[in-house]
Image (cartoon, rainbow, N blue to C red):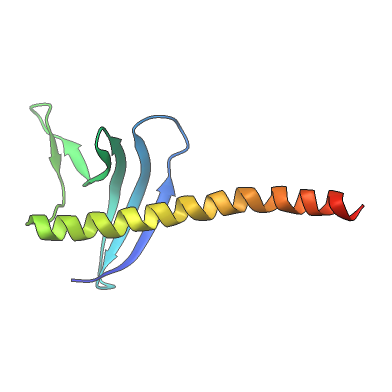
Length: 105
């Protein structure tokens, strides 16, 4: 199994949920609504779920074993960190342009 695409939609509001992610597996199967959550021990993923009749949340799709879960989580969190880094660079770039323009005058 290869994760061939990861799409991160960052959540702008405050709270523990940091992003919602979609992954594509083997260019053939997509899983939407995987959440990136900030917990007490760091970031982790929560698979898509829905509320059952008893009030409990149950995963709609999930890995069968912990190795696969770890692999998916590692890939998603790497992509999430890359998105954060890109956003940080984009924010710094306009500041640098403004500083450079001021120095040229």
